[in-house]
Length: 338
Ligand code: 5GP
Ligand code: MN
Image 1: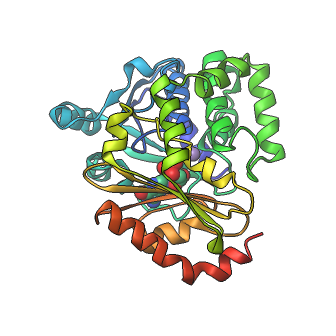
Image 2: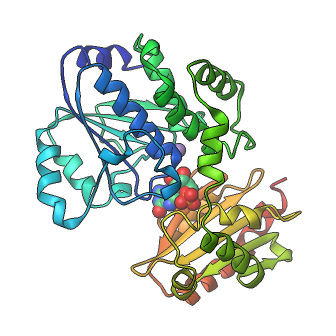
Protein backbone atom coordinates (compact mmCIF):
# COMPACT_ATOMS: atom_id res chain seq x y z
CA UNK A 1 0.00 0.00 0.00
CA UNK A 2 1.52 3.29 -1.12
CA UNK A 3 1.79 6.06 1.52
CA UNK A 4 1.66 3.57 4.40
CA UNK A 5 5.14 4.39 5.69
CA UNK A 6 4.44 8.16 5.47
CA UNK A 7 1.24 7.65 7.46
CA UNK A 8 3.07 5.49 9.98
CA UNK A 9 5.65 8.26 10.46
CA UNK A 10 2.92 10.87 10.94
CA UNK A 11 1.13 8.70 13.49
CA UNK A 12 4.42 8.20 15.35
CA UNK A 13 3.85 11.53 17.12
CA UNK A 14 0.65 12.86 18.73
CA UNK A 15 -1.63 14.56 16.21
CA UNK A 16 -4.78 16.65 16.41
CA UNK A 17 -7.02 14.67 14.15
CA UNK A 18 -10.28 15.49 12.39
CA UNK A 19 -12.19 12.67 10.72
CA UNK A 20 -14.96 13.60 8.34
CA UNK A 21 -17.24 11.73 5.98
CA UNK A 22 -19.99 12.37 3.43
CA UNK A 23 -23.38 13.93 4.12
CA UNK A 24 -26.14 11.60 5.32
CA UNK A 25 -23.52 9.13 6.52
CA UNK A 26 -24.36 5.47 6.01
CA UNK A 27 -22.96 2.53 7.97
CA UNK A 28 -19.74 2.50 5.94
CA UNK A 29 -19.20 6.23 6.34
CA UNK A 30 -20.00 6.42 10.06
CA UNK A 31 -18.64 2.97 10.92
CA UNK A 32 -15.29 3.69 9.25
CA UNK A 33 -15.09 7.11 10.93
CA UNK A 34 -15.81 5.76 14.41
CA UNK A 35 -13.55 2.75 13.96
CA UNK A 36 -10.69 5.03 12.91
CA UNK A 37 -11.42 7.46 15.75
CA UNK A 38 -11.26 4.72 18.39
CA UNK A 39 -8.12 3.27 16.80
CA UNK A 40 -6.31 6.64 16.73
CA UNK A 41 -7.39 7.46 20.28
CA UNK A 42 -5.80 4.20 21.39
CA UNK A 43 -2.62 5.37 19.68
CA UNK A 44 -2.67 8.55 21.76
CA UNK A 45 -4.06 11.10 19.30
CA UNK A 46 -6.74 13.70 19.99
CA UNK A 47 -9.62 12.96 17.61
CA UNK A 48 -12.87 14.67 16.59
CA UNK A 49 -15.36 13.18 14.14
CA UNK A 50 -17.35 15.81 12.22
CA UNK A 51 -20.21 14.87 9.89
CA UNK A 52 -21.82 17.34 7.44
CA UNK A 53 -25.35 16.21 8.44
CA UNK A 54 -27.02 13.87 10.90
CA UNK A 55 -27.29 10.13 10.28
CA UNK A 56 -29.97 7.43 10.69
CA UNK A 57 -30.93 6.33 14.20
CA UNK A 58 -30.17 2.69 13.27
CA UNK A 59 -26.50 3.70 13.61
CA UNK A 60 -26.92 5.00 17.16
CA UNK A 61 -25.47 1.77 18.61
CA UNK A 62 -22.03 2.54 17.21
CA UNK A 63 -19.60 3.18 20.05
CA UNK A 64 -18.36 6.77 19.98
CA UNK A 65 -21.29 8.16 17.98
CA UNK A 66 -22.35 10.24 20.99
CA UNK A 67 -19.20 12.37 20.50
CA UNK A 68 -19.76 13.03 16.79
CA UNK A 69 -20.03 16.74 15.96
CA UNK A 70 -22.80 17.31 13.43
CA UNK A 71 -22.25 20.38 11.28
CA UNK A 72 -24.81 23.13 11.77
CA UNK A 73 -24.41 26.71 10.66
CA UNK A 74 -24.46 27.93 14.28
CA UNK A 75 -21.47 25.69 15.02
CA UNK A 76 -19.50 27.00 12.05
CA UNK A 77 -17.04 29.02 14.18
CA UNK A 78 -16.34 26.20 16.64
CA UNK A 79 -15.90 23.66 13.83
CA UNK A 80 -13.78 26.09 11.80
CA UNK A 81 -11.41 26.42 14.74
CA UNK A 82 -11.14 22.63 15.17
CA UNK A 83 -10.36 22.23 11.47
CA UNK A 84 -7.82 25.09 11.57
CA UNK A 85 -6.02 23.63 14.57
CA UNK A 86 -5.98 20.08 13.19
CA UNK A 87 -2.66 18.62 12.10
CA UNK A 88 -4.20 15.67 10.29
CA UNK A 89 -7.56 15.39 8.51
CA UNK A 90 -8.98 12.07 7.38
CA UNK A 91 -11.63 12.11 4.66
CA UNK A 92 -13.52 8.84 4.60
CA UNK A 93 -15.92 7.32 2.08
CA UNK A 94 -16.16 10.26 -0.33
CA UNK A 95 -13.99 11.36 -3.20
CA UNK A 96 -14.84 15.01 -3.77
CA UNK A 97 -15.03 17.85 -1.26
CA UNK A 98 -18.40 18.96 -2.64
CA UNK A 99 -19.84 15.87 -0.91
CA UNK A 100 -19.24 17.45 2.52
CA UNK A 101 -20.94 20.76 1.76
CA UNK A 102 -19.61 23.79 3.64
CA UNK A 103 -17.07 21.65 5.47
CA UNK A 104 -15.43 21.03 2.09
CA UNK A 105 -13.96 24.54 1.80
CA UNK A 106 -12.74 24.46 5.41
CA UNK A 107 -10.93 21.21 4.70
CA UNK A 108 -9.55 22.46 1.39
CA UNK A 109 -7.86 25.51 2.92
CA UNK A 110 -6.77 23.81 6.18
CA UNK A 111 -3.02 23.52 6.74
CA UNK A 112 -3.30 19.95 8.11
CA UNK A 113 -2.05 16.99 6.11
CA UNK A 114 -5.02 15.30 4.44
CA UNK A 115 -5.56 11.59 4.10
CA UNK A 116 -8.25 10.14 1.84
CA UNK A 117 -9.55 6.62 2.47
CA UNK A 118 -12.21 5.80 -0.08
CA UNK A 119 -13.60 3.47 -2.73
CA UNK A 120 -15.50 5.88 -5.02
CA UNK A 121 -14.50 6.67 -8.58
CA UNK A 122 -12.55 9.71 -9.79
CA UNK A 123 -11.12 11.10 -6.56
CA UNK A 124 -10.53 14.83 -6.51
CA UNK A 125 -6.89 15.78 -6.10
CA UNK A 126 -6.90 17.37 -2.65
CA UNK A 127 -5.32 14.79 -0.33
CA UNK A 128 -1.65 14.44 0.57
CA UNK A 129 -2.01 10.70 1.06
CA UNK A 130 -4.51 8.39 -0.58
CA UNK A 131 -5.66 4.92 0.37
CA UNK A 132 -8.07 4.46 -2.44
CA UNK A 133 -9.38 1.60 -4.53
CA UNK A 134 -12.58 1.15 -6.49
CA UNK A 135 -11.96 -2.58 -6.18
CA UNK A 136 -12.75 -2.36 -2.48
CA UNK A 137 -16.36 -3.10 -1.52
CA UNK A 138 -16.29 -0.59 1.31
CA UNK A 139 -14.14 2.13 2.80
CA UNK A 140 -14.17 -0.04 5.92
CA UNK A 141 -12.41 -2.80 3.98
CA UNK A 142 -9.55 -0.44 3.03
CA UNK A 143 -9.45 0.94 6.56
CA UNK A 144 -9.01 -2.54 8.01
CA UNK A 145 -6.08 -3.12 5.67
CA UNK A 146 -4.53 0.23 6.61
CA UNK A 147 -4.77 -0.61 10.33
CA UNK A 148 -3.18 -4.00 9.77
CA UNK A 149 -0.63 -2.49 7.36
CA UNK A 150 0.44 -0.04 10.06
CA UNK A 151 1.27 -3.05 12.21
CA UNK A 152 -1.54 -2.23 14.63
CA UNK A 153 -4.01 -5.01 13.93
CA UNK A 154 -3.92 -5.83 17.64
CA UNK A 155 -5.62 -2.52 18.42
CA UNK A 156 -8.77 -3.70 16.62
CA UNK A 157 -11.06 -4.60 19.50
CA UNK A 158 -14.70 -5.74 19.51
CA UNK A 159 -16.10 -2.20 19.15
CA UNK A 160 -13.80 -1.27 16.29
CA UNK A 161 -14.43 -4.63 14.63
CA UNK A 162 -18.21 -4.15 14.79
CA UNK A 163 -18.02 -0.67 13.20
CA UNK A 164 -15.85 -2.02 10.38
CA UNK A 165 -18.09 -5.06 9.95
CA UNK A 166 -21.16 -2.80 9.70
CA UNK A 167 -19.57 -0.88 6.81
CA UNK A 168 -18.64 -4.03 4.92
CA UNK A 169 -21.99 -5.69 5.59
CA UNK A 170 -24.07 -2.77 4.28
CA UNK A 171 -21.88 -1.80 1.30
CA UNK A 172 -21.99 -5.40 0.05
CA UNK A 173 -25.78 -5.53 0.52
CA UNK A 174 -25.32 -8.15 3.28
CA UNK A 175 -22.66 -10.00 1.28
CA UNK A 176 -24.90 -10.25 -1.81
CA UNK A 177 -23.56 -7.69 -4.33
CA UNK A 178 -20.89 -8.57 -6.90
CA UNK A 179 -18.33 -6.66 -4.78
CA UNK A 180 -18.48 -9.50 -2.22
CA UNK A 181 -14.99 -10.86 -2.80
CA UNK A 182 -12.85 -13.44 -1.12
CA UNK A 183 -11.05 -10.55 0.57
CA UNK A 184 -14.36 -9.26 1.96
CA UNK A 185 -15.17 -12.62 3.51
CA UNK A 186 -11.62 -13.06 4.79
CA UNK A 187 -11.76 -9.69 6.55
CA UNK A 188 -15.26 -10.42 7.90
CA UNK A 189 -13.90 -13.66 9.34
CA UNK A 190 -11.01 -11.80 10.98
CA UNK A 191 -13.45 -9.29 12.45
CA UNK A 192 -15.46 -12.13 13.98
CA UNK A 193 -12.17 -13.38 15.39
CA UNK A 194 -11.72 -9.99 17.03
CA UNK A 195 -15.08 -10.32 18.75
CA UNK A 196 -17.58 -8.77 16.33
CA UNK A 197 -21.11 -9.95 17.17
CA UNK A 198 -22.46 -10.19 13.63
CA UNK A 199 -26.01 -11.08 14.65
CA UNK A 200 -26.17 -8.04 16.90
CA UNK A 201 -24.80 -5.70 14.21
CA UNK A 202 -27.25 -6.99 11.58
CA UNK A 203 -30.21 -6.78 13.89
CA UNK A 204 -29.32 -3.21 14.97
CA UNK A 205 -29.11 -2.13 11.35
CA UNK A 206 -31.90 -4.11 9.69
CA UNK A 207 -34.39 -4.87 12.44
CA UNK A 208 -34.86 -1.48 14.01
CA UNK A 209 -37.76 -0.16 11.94
CA UNK A 210 -40.26 2.23 13.42
CA UNK A 211 -43.90 1.44 12.68
CA UNK A 212 -44.09 4.69 10.69
CA UNK A 213 -41.20 3.55 8.52
CA UNK A 214 -42.69 0.13 7.87
CA UNK A 215 -46.03 1.71 6.93
CA UNK A 216 -44.20 4.19 4.71
CA UNK A 217 -42.52 1.30 2.85
CA UNK A 218 -45.92 -0.36 2.37
CA UNK A 219 -47.40 2.90 1.10
CA UNK A 220 -44.51 3.57 -1.26
CA UNK A 221 -44.73 0.05 -2.70
CA UNK A 222 -48.46 0.21 -3.28
CA UNK A 223 -48.86 3.85 -4.34
CA UNK A 224 -45.57 5.29 -5.46
CA UNK A 225 -43.82 2.56 -7.45
CA UNK A 226 -43.91 2.85 -11.24
CA UNK A 227 -42.67 0.26 -13.67
CA UNK A 228 -41.72 0.86 -17.30
CA UNK A 229 -41.28 -2.64 -18.68
CA UNK A 230 -40.06 -1.42 -22.08
CA UNK A 231 -36.94 -0.02 -20.44
CA UNK A 232 -36.70 -2.61 -17.64
CA UNK A 233 -36.95 0.29 -15.22
CA UNK A 234 -38.79 0.71 -11.93
CA UNK A 235 -38.83 3.87 -9.85
CA UNK A 236 -40.42 5.63 -6.90
CA UNK A 237 -41.39 9.28 -6.69
CA UNK A 238 -41.75 10.51 -3.10
CA UNK A 239 -43.13 13.95 -2.27
CA UNK A 240 -42.54 16.09 0.79
CA UNK A 241 -46.15 15.44 1.81
CA UNK A 242 -45.48 11.67 1.75
CA UNK A 243 -42.43 12.14 3.99
CA UNK A 244 -44.36 14.40 6.34
CA UNK A 245 -47.37 12.08 6.58
CA UNK A 246 -45.20 9.15 7.65
CA UNK A 247 -43.07 11.36 9.95
CA UNK A 248 -40.03 10.36 7.93
CA UNK A 249 -36.70 10.54 9.74
CA UNK A 250 -33.15 10.48 8.39
CA UNK A 251 -32.54 7.04 6.94
CA UNK A 252 -36.20 6.09 6.56
CA UNK A 253 -35.98 6.10 2.75
CA UNK A 254 -32.68 4.21 2.69
CA UNK A 255 -32.89 0.86 0.95
CA UNK A 256 -36.34 1.52 -0.54
CA UNK A 257 -34.89 1.71 -4.05
CA UNK A 258 -33.73 -1.90 -3.68
CA UNK A 259 -37.35 -3.08 -3.67
CA UNK A 260 -37.72 -1.64 -7.17
CA UNK A 261 -34.58 -3.46 -8.24
CA UNK A 262 -35.85 -6.72 -6.76
CA UNK A 263 -38.52 -6.98 -9.45
CA UNK A 264 -37.81 -9.71 -11.94
CA UNK A 265 -36.19 -8.45 -15.17
CA UNK A 266 -35.64 -4.93 -13.86
CA UNK A 267 -32.19 -3.55 -14.70
CA UNK A 268 -32.52 0.07 -13.58
CA UNK A 269 -34.14 1.32 -10.38
CA UNK A 270 -34.42 4.83 -9.10
CA UNK A 271 -35.96 6.75 -6.24
CA UNK A 272 -36.70 10.45 -6.65
CA UNK A 273 -37.30 12.24 -3.37
CA UNK A 274 -38.30 15.83 -2.71
CA UNK A 275 -35.93 16.97 0.04
CA UNK A 276 -37.17 20.57 -0.04
CA UNK A 277 -34.05 22.47 -1.01
CA UNK A 278 -33.33 19.96 -3.77
CA UNK A 279 -34.57 16.76 -5.35
CA UNK A 280 -32.43 13.74 -4.47
CA UNK A 281 -32.09 10.84 -6.88
CA UNK A 282 -30.71 7.43 -5.96
CA UNK A 283 -29.97 4.92 -8.69
CA UNK A 284 -29.36 1.19 -8.57
CA UNK A 285 -28.72 -1.26 -11.38
CA UNK A 286 -27.77 -4.83 -12.06
CA UNK A 287 -25.15 -6.17 -14.44
CA UNK A 288 -23.19 -3.86 -16.69
CA UNK A 289 -25.52 -0.92 -16.71
CA UNK A 290 -23.49 1.91 -15.13
CA UNK A 291 -25.77 4.19 -13.15
CA UNK A 292 -22.87 6.39 -12.03
CA UNK A 293 -22.52 7.59 -15.64
CA UNK A 294 -26.20 8.47 -15.79
CA UNK A 295 -25.97 10.24 -12.41
CA UNK A 296 -22.88 12.16 -13.45
CA UNK A 297 -24.05 13.20 -16.91
CA UNK A 298 -27.55 14.32 -15.98
CA UNK A 299 -27.79 14.90 -12.24
CA UNK A 300 -24.40 16.29 -11.17
CA UNK A 301 -23.71 13.19 -9.13
CA UNK A 302 -21.74 9.97 -9.23
CA UNK A 303 -21.07 6.83 -7.24
CA UNK A 304 -20.42 3.25 -8.26
CA UNK A 305 -21.42 1.25 -11.33
CA UNK A 306 -24.46 -0.30 -9.65
CA UNK A 307 -25.25 2.33 -7.00
CA UNK A 308 -25.12 6.06 -7.56
CA UNK A 309 -26.87 9.27 -6.70
CA UNK A 310 -27.37 12.82 -7.82
CA UNK A 311 -29.54 15.89 -7.38
CA UNK A 312 -31.89 18.07 -9.37
CA UNK A 313 -32.96 21.64 -8.74
CA UNK A 314 -36.09 21.32 -10.93
CA UNK A 315 -39.49 20.41 -9.45
CA UNK A 316 -40.34 16.85 -8.46
CA UNK A 317 -42.55 16.42 -11.53
CA UNK A 318 -39.97 17.91 -13.89
CA UNK A 319 -37.26 15.70 -12.42
CA UNK A 320 -39.41 12.61 -12.96
CA UNK A 321 -40.03 13.70 -16.57
CA UNK A 322 -36.33 14.31 -17.12
CA UNK A 323 -35.52 10.83 -15.81
CA UNK A 324 -38.21 9.10 -17.89
CA UNK A 325 -37.22 11.06 -21.02
CA UNK A 326 -33.64 9.85 -20.65
CA UNK A 327 -34.58 6.20 -20.86
CA UNK A 328 -34.82 5.85 -24.68
CA UNK A 329 -31.19 6.91 -25.08
CA UNK A 330 -30.13 4.19 -22.63
CA UNK A 331 -32.31 1.47 -24.16
CA UNK A 332 -29.47 -0.45 -25.78
CA UNK A 333 -27.26 -0.34 -22.68
CA UNK A 334 -30.18 -1.46 -20.49
CA UNK A 335 -31.02 -4.34 -22.84
CA UNK A 336 -27.45 -5.58 -22.91
CA UNK A 337 -26.83 -5.18 -19.17
CA UNK A 338 -27.36 -8.82 -18.30
P1 5GP B 1 -27.27 6.55 -2.20
O1 5GP B 1 -28.15 6.32 -3.35
O2 5GP B 1 -27.30 5.42 -1.23
O3 5GP B 1 -27.42 7.91 -1.60
O4 5GP B 1 -25.80 6.57 -2.80
C1 5GP B 1 -25.31 5.52 -3.58
C2 5GP B 1 -23.90 5.81 -3.98
O5 5GP B 1 -23.85 6.96 -4.82
C3 5GP B 1 -23.01 6.12 -2.80
O6 5GP B 1 -21.81 5.43 -3.00
C4 5GP B 1 -22.79 7.60 -2.85
O7 5GP B 1 -21.52 7.93 -2.46
C5 5GP B 1 -23.03 7.97 -4.29
N1 5GP B 1 -23.78 9.23 -4.34
C6 5GP B 1 -25.01 9.45 -3.86
N2 5GP B 1 -25.40 10.72 -4.08
C7 5GP B 1 -24.38 11.33 -4.72
C8 5GP B 1 -24.17 12.65 -5.21
O8 5GP B 1 -25.01 13.54 -5.11
N3 5GP B 1 -22.96 12.88 -5.79
C9 5GP B 1 -22.01 11.90 -5.93
N4 5GP B 1 -20.85 12.22 -6.54
N5 5GP B 1 -22.19 10.66 -5.49
C10 5GP B 1 -23.35 10.36 -4.88
MN1 MN C 1 -18.87 3.19 1.18
